[in-house]
Length: 286
Image: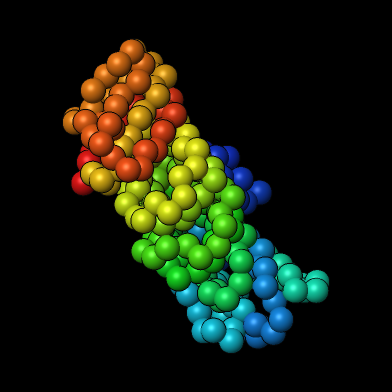
């Protein structure tokens, strides 16, 4: 069993590229804490990259006058966070790396990164996680670009309000873990891409759909549920393996294209390019 855990963890690290070595399993835990906050100042753009190998990540909207407020709990005996922050004109950059090395326990719930980000800046964000429970709530933020890579853990990503920024791209990868995204129709992205490994994923495209961009979905061995609003017309252009299990209730098939029943009456229409391996994919209207 222990060998199997190592195989799963190493696979996740390969898929996400989030750490260079396995977390240490020897030694004792020495709890440590680090906090850091930066004022908003004249900053208009923030590029942030957070990489967490083992532990939990929580991202929320912060105070109006704070660029970010960062809090990290970790094992001070075997690990130390790397934090790089810089400003240039009206732009700023933040990079946080915590490998999540620990003591005698394999699963360490004492490694926690908690960060709140300003809603006043255009955000270019990258969140890369390995093993852990992660919540990324981007509601109320101005997301210009988003990258998410989930390894073995469980990751939930929310956007419950309209994105006030012009979003160029949203790129999401799920390795072995479970990933859930809601409010995808609120991003107003130009390009959305999802790549699913052998994990379980859920993509909820609810939202205002003030802008409609390109959508590309690729699923390998895992399972994916796609939830679509019933007031938007949908075309799914499918390239699938004969071994894949594709379920499209409420859609009409025309060749390799699936069309929602309201395709001729809907005021808005989205097109999804779908590539499936041998996994399970289901589209639902809501």
